[in-house]
Structure formats: structure tokens, C-alpha cells
Image (tube, rainbow, N blue to C red; front, side):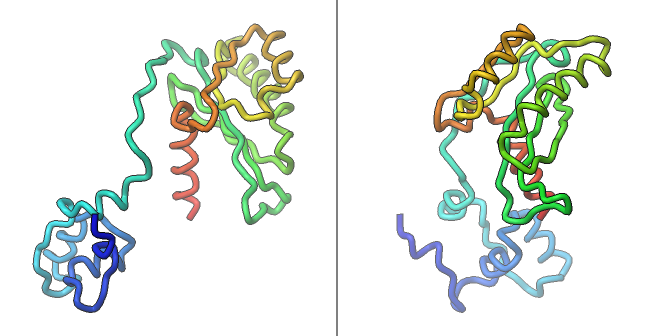
Length: 191
């Protein structure tokens, strides 16, 4: 593929220049803005057929869908720790842990000052589920195989609650896609 297609210059068609200036907005949105006259007169080039833009928007190759599914709330809870953030909150938190119920997709987010505070938050979250949801217990936790999730304290906690730890393969965040998509959503919303 010719990488010169990715570079824009003053000779590039205005449609592509506006597409770039507006943060790579979709072709349909750009066509609408041109139609209502906000962008002046533009020729309708079709961005969606340009292979370089398809390639540039692709973050990764397709990955097989997960075959696991839950039949009731708290059958499966996805979680992971995110951070450090370049900026801290008022109480100096730079990390957060998110818990996502696979059945309802309801999300709980807890801020943390230290990366390893997740264990105490995990215990509090399990207690919250039991007290606020009619003594429900979390059947399965799904997370990656990071070193923090393979410690003795972590495995002992799961063994004492008879909870299954479903771990994804190393260096494949796609296996924990629910949490990864939630991270993207949270970061984009925050921006």
C-alpha cells in the first residue's frame, strides 16, 4: 500500500481536508454537514471506500467473539485495574478498578490511590453484592493474568468464596473485551 495516501496537502480534495480537520468524522456526518452548507461547497468523494482510511481506523485485526455468556446477574463479573493516569483526582487517586456484570452490563467504578488497593475493594464489592442484591454471590470473576491477579491473597479470597477465576491469555486484552471496551468508552467520555 502506498503510505503517501495518508498524507494530506493543500492539493488534497477539500472533502478529505475537512475529514481530517474534524477529527476523522464519519463520511455520512461529513456529507450531512456539506449538504446543509456548513462547510461550503464540496465534491462528494466517498471516504468509506478509501482503503487507507479503513486501515487507519482499524485498531487491530478481528478477534473471535467470546462464547461465554451469563444467564443471571452476577453469574460472571468482568474486572480490571486501569492506570496510572497522568493526572490525579482531588484525593490523589490515579487508578481505578471497574466491575462489569456480564448479564446486565451494569458497571461499578472505584478510584484507587495505589494499584494494589484492588484487593480490599474486591472484598468490599463482594460484600456489597451480598448485602444489596438479596444475598447473591458472584459465581465467576473474569480478568487478565496480570501478576496482581495471581497472588496468594487473591487466589485464597476466591477459594474462600467458592468463586471461579476465569483468566484470559497473556497479552490478549481481547479476551477481556468487555472491560477493554468500557475503558475506551470511559476515556473517550472523559476527554
